[in-house]
Length: 192
Picture 1: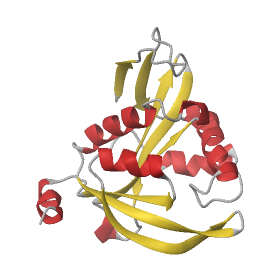
Picture 2 (picture 1 turned 120 degrees about the horizontal axis):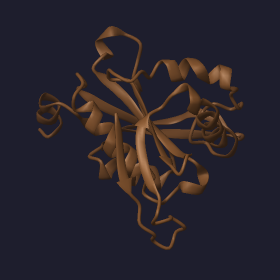
Picture 3 (picture 1 turned 90 degrees about the vertical axis):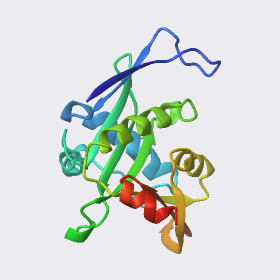
Picture 4 (picture 1 turned 135 degrees about the horizontal axis):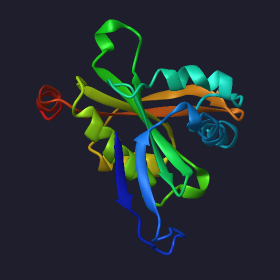
């Protein structure tokens, strides 16, 4: 899977001469993927990991996202630099959940707010259209208005809120859950 998109200058430091490529993540990306993720571990409540991960600790996560099937890892790259990544992962380990995925987007902190998350999600949902996936779910630590807007723009709808389920930085955090139908049967059920 590889897609290219022209990025035009918009006053936010995006170079109009560069082209953003979205492709499957590889072992060669693991160091930068870990760096991006660890920013959110150390600086935000967005993920409930509280200690930074090493590349070796992150490798099983990478291997759980092959080039085919419902569990994917897509990266956005521009001029040889990773801008961020999007994943679809197993929602729960029990077999009945096999057609549900949990999706997420993580961006290099200097690339937030420049359309990279939208580019990654568009590519991810295009790939998932060819897979046997019924519903996509996303858990968002609140408050996180930017992530909520991104998910709603891609057709996610609120599905519930778990209150005070994570403790990080000395306080408890809620997680809002969103879901998006990916199959025709799911769309019919959700729109009733």
